Amino acid sequence: RSPVPLVVTVHDLTTLAVPAYHRGLRARLYNALVSASARGANHVLTDSYASKTDIVGRLDIPEARVTAVYLGVGAQYSPRPDNSLVDMAVRRKYDLPDFYVLYLGGYELHKNVVTLLYAYTYVAQALGEDYPLLLAGRKPAGSAPAFPDYDGIIERAGLGKFVRWIGYVDEEDKPVLYRNAEVFVFPSRHEGFGLPPLEAMACGTPVVASDGGSLPEIIGPAGFAIDPDDARQMAGAIISLVMDEQLAAGLRRQGPEQAAQFTWERTAIETLAVYRQVTSDE
Image (cartoon, rainbow, N blue to C red):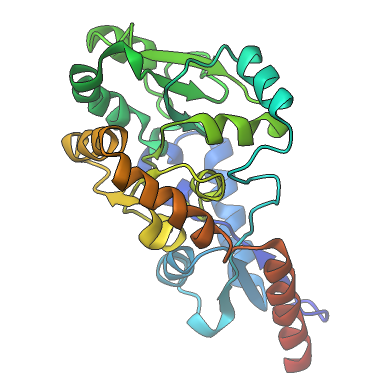
């Protein structure tokens, strides 16, 4: 142990939980480093209670040595645009359609975008081409053990007319994409915290997320938490929010209220309290 109390942050153990991520020397070294750092620390910080449970169980660390401190959401994520001209410029920049369902995030295996694509075969039948699925974020260069063959899946599922890749989104443009989406979908199986659904809720966008990992903690009663393996249920939630204006309006009200509980000020205060406690214990 270090003579100075050592506090390490472990966001999640996805790389340990997903077998496909165990392959290769780099992955094994990373997993070994995370495990050794956490076990050797005086205290471990993480960003959700789901991650805390995972760290305690998988790394055999006493519960008292692990503290969950939630992350926050920035003030720029709001239902109301600061400048409508900026919103218009961003819409043109990404050629956003009038109506769309949005996914914004990574494309590794655990993000479960494949199930979202299968769900969209049902959404496309119900809603047609007027509500395309926009896939935002850097598109994988090709398929690999950790990255499915998305283009092949889209082609085989007949989704070519219903799914659009819009690529990397600049950080300052994200609020506009969230605000203008009919629904934001985040089907990830393993998530240490899950900033995208929180940001979408803060923007007043109805959220459909999986019920795995930390996501139920984040969305609370302000969104749909569904089985990540159930493409029909995922599709049903998306279709319901597009078709049922009253249901969607309720989540548009609840989302910002739920997101308001997650502030960076609270994150800083609770993190500082952990450091003070660990220091006083020495």
